[in-house]
Every structure is written in structure tokens, then in C-alpha cells.
Image (cartoon, one colour):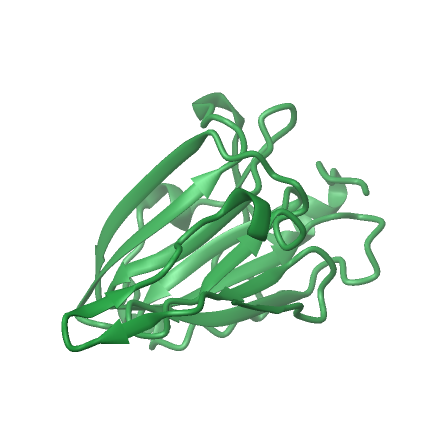
Length: 186
């Protein structure tokens, strides 16, 4: 497998080794020992899956302490543009984002540590998205940043005039609001 470290500390893009022949293919989608370093020792306790249609934007989401979550995400069917935004106030990359295309074809996985907002847009007609979390979901600890925040300027790789969002995501606060009372310090 190949581990790529983006320019924002803590993030990792993982490309597993795929064994293909005339029957199909096989690959390890997760191996705790092999992924240990790339995933900063995260111990995953919950798996989630979502299905979305083209143009859907989910995010930017995070869980507030003490229910913060690290995530290991991948696409089972389709193509998404996956984005992580550094919300760690003392980080030299605070407020910067990184995006990566994840697809069923490229089989890449993206590790997002605690202290990041996360979201994705669907580039294919439909997409099934799966992710592991290192902490259980806690509804009262949901947090978010507005997907089209003017300061962050995330490129979602879709026409935002046609983006499909939840009512909740349309009402997320701006990054400027977050900076007034940052949740993640280091």
C-alpha cells in the first residue's frame, strides 16, 4: 500500500495494493497494524455508510469534544471529492483545506484526524460512501462550518448553484464565527 502525506499535518491518503486477475480483485480495505502509523493510532469503533446523488454536498461536519472523531473514509461505488479543513487553532495550517478524489475505481482512502471539519461532494450519478470513526456519534455534539464559506473558499468540483444540501448544512456558521470561539486548540 501507498501512504501519501498531504501538506496539512495529520492527514493521510492511503492507496491499498490491489490483487486483480480474471476473477476480479482483492485488497485489504483496513488492517490495524498496517494502517497504525497513517491513522495516528486511531482505534475505530463505528462504521457508517451513506448513499447520495450527483451534486450532493455533505459537510463541513465535526464532533465537539469530548466526542471528537477521527475518520477513515472511502467510496464503495461512484466518485466523490472529499475535503478536510484544519480547525486546530494552534496549527500552522489552521483554516486551510485539502481535497482528494475518492472513487470505487481508485480505491483511495482518506484519514482525517480529530480537529478537522470534513465533507464531500458527489461527482458521479450516485455514490456510496463508507467511513470508520474512532469515537461513537453523539448528536448533541454536532458541529459544522458553512460549506461555501467565503474565507475558506473550498472548491467542491461542482456547480454550487446546483448543489444539494440538507437544511442543517445550509445553516452552519461561517469560519469567521468559528474563529471567535475555536473548539480545537492544538
